[in-house]
Image 1 (cartoon, helix red, strand yellow):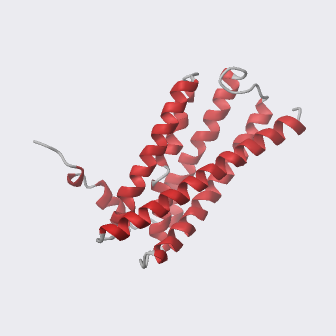
Image 2 (cartoon, helix red, strand yellow):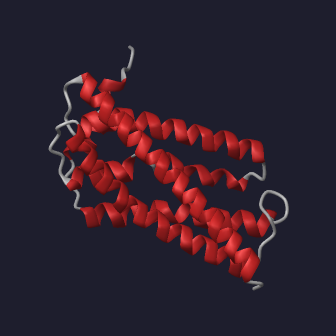
Image 3 (tube, one colour):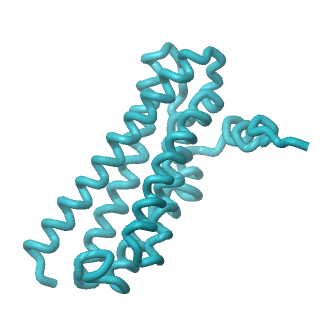
Length: 190
C-alpha cells in the first residue's frame, strides 16, 4: 500500500481548525518562540568561545529576550503581511487564517535551534538550511489548503509571495540578533 501526502489529513485539520488567535499564540507561537533563545543561551554557556563567541550569562539573557520579543512581534507582522498578500491574488483571507499560516510555516525554523546541543557548525548549518527548505515546503503546501485556493496559478503566486515575505522576516530577525549581539558585547560588560 502506498501512502500519498493527500491521504494525510493534517492539512485538512489545520485548515478547518477554528482556534482563536490567542489560543494559537499561547499553545504554539509562544512555546515555539522560546526554543531559539533558550538554545542560544544553552550553546553560549556550554560552548562559549567555540560554537558561539564567549558571552556572559547576562549578555546571553539580553540577546535571548530581544530575540524572543522580536519573534512574537514578527508572527503578528507576518500574519498582517499574509493577510494583505491575499488581496494581491484576489483572495478574501481572514486574519485568523493568515495568523494560522504565520504560526505553522516557521515551525521548522523554531525547531532547528534544538540542534545547538551538538557543538558543530556543520550540523547546525545543515539543519538550519533544511529548516528553511522545510518552511518553504510548508508555505507551498499550507497556503492553498488554508486559504482554499483551487487555481494552481494563484496558489503558486500567493505561496511564493508568502515565502518571500517569510525570508525577508527571517533575515530581519537575524539582523536584529546581530545588532543586539553587537550592542550587548560592545557596550555592556556584564
